[in-house]
Amino acid sequence: MLLDGFHALKHALRFGAEIPLALAQDRTAALALAAELAPDLAGRLDGMLRQVPPETLRELLPRPHPTGVAALAVRGSGHRAPVPGEQPGARTPRTAPLIVLDNPRHLGNIGAVIRLAAGCGAAGVLTTGTVDPWHPAVVRASAGLHFATAVERRLPAELPAGPTYALDPAGADLRTLTLPDEALLVFGSERSGLSPELRARADQLVALPMRPQVSSYNLATSVAMTLYHWMAQRPE
Ligand SMILES: C[S@@+](CC[C@H](N)C(=O)[O-])C[C@H]1O[C@@H](n2cnc3c(N)ncnc32)[C@H](O)[C@@H]1O
Image (cartoon, rainbow, N blue to C red; front, side, top):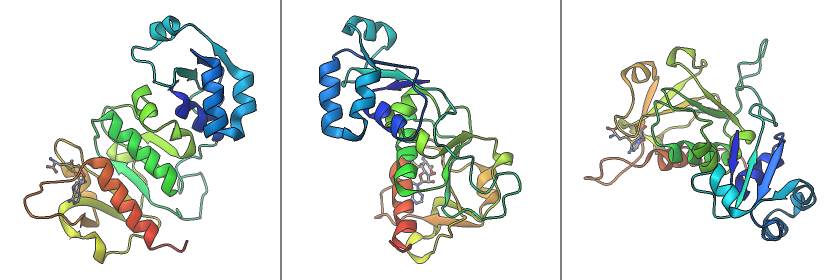
């Protein structure tokens, strides 16, 4: 799979991805970036980055990342665990919520949600619908943090068990609720909101407070508010 940009490569390396090829249009500049932003990886990047002319990078990628770095990673490598609570014979419950995106359409939103899940320590991100959550544009938007959490596409009927909290403006105010660690937090599609199938599965509809006349929040910012609420109720 393609890692587009320095940050995607940095996170993929930190979370154990196998990287068979890493290219830079300016090795010196890329290594200076590494010294500044990822000194923990400077030696490894020095050993792996191959310089190629900018035209070569443009031939490989329609719009190369401004950092002029691109790499290939082996999908499925790295420290990614299987979806928690589903390992064969697992008896331990999930210790952090799973995010479910119900038919998301915008690749940037999906990547931003994966980045949130990685940063907040959520159990993973499951998507329904037709979009591949490992699409290169999603990986670019997640800054390569796919390797730091579980990311899978599922049919709605294949979602794991667990108390299901579906986000919808008609629900109960999030501020009045405690989100359990084993919760599935379900968010609707940017275009049409929650599907009837996942709405029917919800144990609780949850609303994010909004001023009157505002119709809805952006999908990724909705996930951010909800995950922050979960984190704020946890010990540090
Ligand atoms: C951009 S919104 C969807 C708007 C869509 N036009 C609709 O009719 O619902 C994407 C998702 O973010 C979540 N969301 C956005 N604003 C919300 C709010 N105020 N309360 C609860 N969920 C919200 C919901 O899960 C929603 O389905």
